[in-house]
Image 1 (cartoon, rainbow, N blue to C red):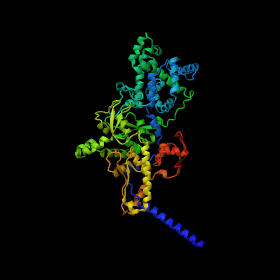
Image 2 (image 1 turned 120 degrees about the vertical axis):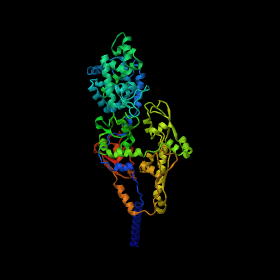
Image 3 (image 1 turned 30 degrees about the horizontal axis):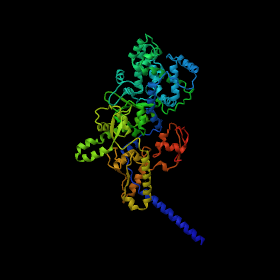
Image 4 (image 1 turned 180 degrees about the horizontal axis):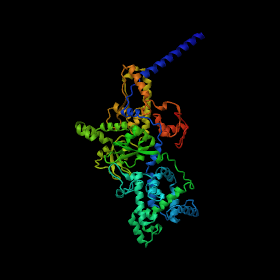
Amino acid sequence: MIVRKVSIMVSVLFSMSMFSQEIAKTEIELKPIVKVSYLDSVKSSFKKDELATRVDSLWMNELVSLDIYDDLTKDIQTINTDVTVDEELPTELLKQRLQAMNEKSPFDIEYNQGLENIIKSFLKNRKKSFSRLMALSEYYFPIFEDAFAKQNVPLEIKYLAVVESALNPKAVSKMGATGLWQFMYGTGKQYALKIDSYIDERSDPMKATAACSEYMTKMYSMFGDWELVLASYNSGPGNVTKAIRRSGGKTKYWDIRNHLPKETQGYVPAFLATMYLFEYHKEHGINPQRALVKNFETDTVQIKAQMSFKQIADLLDMPQSQIQLLNPSYKLNIVPFYQSEPHYLRLPKDKVATFVSNEDKIYAYAAYQSQNKTMPTRLALKVTPKAKAKLENIIDTDYKSYKVQKGDNLGTIASKYHVDVIDLKKWNNLKSNAVALGRNLKIKTDYDPVTKSFKELKSTIAVEKKSEEAIASTDDKDKKNTQSQEYKVASGDNLGSIAKKFGMTIADLKELNNLTSNNIGLGKTLVISKAVPENIDENAVTTAIASNSSIDSFKKKATSSKDLGEDYYVKKGDSLYSISKKYPGVTISDIKKWNNIKDGEIKPGMKLKING
């Protein structure tokens, strides 16, 4: 009896094993052929460079943030040097430190109560800001020091960029002063900085610093005093000479300070206070944040055809914000091509190597995209007037309003909402690239960078539920063969986020749905995968699977890495961003969570769990 029961159990187990193998075989055979987009096919043929991207995307956001600039600008304009600040710093100790700074500086640094009040105010209110600024300084200060050394300008002038722009090349004042050194339009032109529809060299760190160095040299030849040079930089040489006359011919800054414009009265003390905090940050417990890129880790390549930042980012697998940081002088996120002059693109050295090794393919892809650029909506209405009423209804309901903020330009706004600058100008009847502060712009897009998290989470849960139901329905072979998978667009969705959810490329998604642009309407139903024919050619499927498995890391695979479990050992040059790119579907936050990483710092040889 026992032998009989054992025999029955063995038979059952054997049958279940055979049944599971048949299901697995069926799933393999029914796998649809994944179409490789033109972008992926170009990248799959690239010569590989294994060096990892050295810039973390979170630090990119830090570098392009304008909050420190706003805070410091407000402080300098409103700070009252006569108000005593309660902050622990003995006056005698401060005098000793200022004397030590004076001995090794061409500036006349003397103690006074106003300077003490500003230093204490910065220590009380801006410690965190200076910690962040010191990280930025690791990238920008070597550029400044190199330019100043060539003109014999004091290297301490580098601290002036902190006061002027909070080390943000995209900073724009209420008066229109732009860049790290806050040049006005006329002054920029005077010092041969190029400003046109595509380029504003006031935001170019190297060229703007060279212009600043030239200005400083010229002003010093006039005044012979570096404090007065700084005052003239802020208010103009005319206001400084007026203050000298009104003071009875005195030529020291502190003697003529009360006769200068109000902002200039706090300008030089703010510069000296900034110098003090950089020199004595350790003594005050200011810990500089870590800079993840140095200027010497980047290089330039001359561009031989017009290219957009998005094209470059897609081809080189790097964040578009990183390209914006390293190339801030390009206003519209486009590197133009003029026959008469060269234009350069600054990239991390490993990306330069990839670019140079594959130039022909990169330019061919850019040319292909230009030739196949979609027709603007308004032009399409003229060509097909019968569809005009229907399209106008869609346009009217899809417009969003955006109020232009300080520091905005058409390029940054277009990038924020994933639209083209050309469309942005047409929607708002703009004749030039200039846009007024406070103006409300109409934007036709379904991408909202602010309100998306909750509804996107709900839609993700719905998608996962659909996926589970689709897997459960594999028993019905005929049904699976005749149905397509669909997805309804939710608020906050865009083609990029939807493609990522389903492990496919944007190009695939657009091709499946015959989309000619990246704009999708709220509530629109998208086809995620087409119906698989019943009479599948087994040899063709096998060939497709073999082909798919050979596509390298540039190819986005349908299988998410979150379904796998493995260890990764950190290599030299790795960052959380570069590691996450090796595992499609895995984010920086995932890696941090799985490995209890708090600050994002990783070291070579460190063992990381992927899907811990």
